[in-house]
Length: 169
Image (spheres, rainbow, N blue to C red):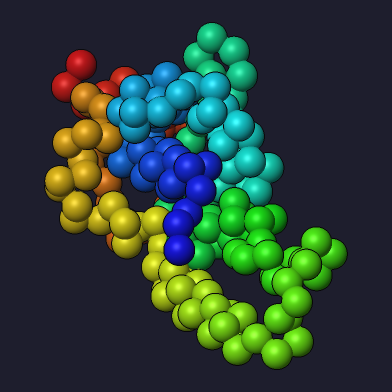
């Protein structure tokens, strides 16, 4: 199994936002930290916004931030938002399937079972699980001046938090 680049980039962008709470982050900051094309990231951010994972703000001081608390964003939900439109195998799409083994294939059943197990595992994890107490992840993704990540409260930073200057300035 292999995730698409878009799905992988979506998780990177969400982790970046989660590790920089209380501020609006810019696409170029995410692209630079995640070694991604800003154009490709723009497409991913658009989908994340349409699906309610992030809020976007246009303009000079625009960017994005999490639309929900990170413990309310399920990893399985994110993966489905990006992967569900692509059939896992040819035989999973009844409209385009040309496999002559479809009716008798036990491999398809095994793949379905494995895919269900994969999503069940991802459904048990949240964005908070991916970033909480993960100091190794903070180094490449946390911007200077961003507050420490807290997942205890479950509260999402407000617009006032994003407008406030970082502590110590």
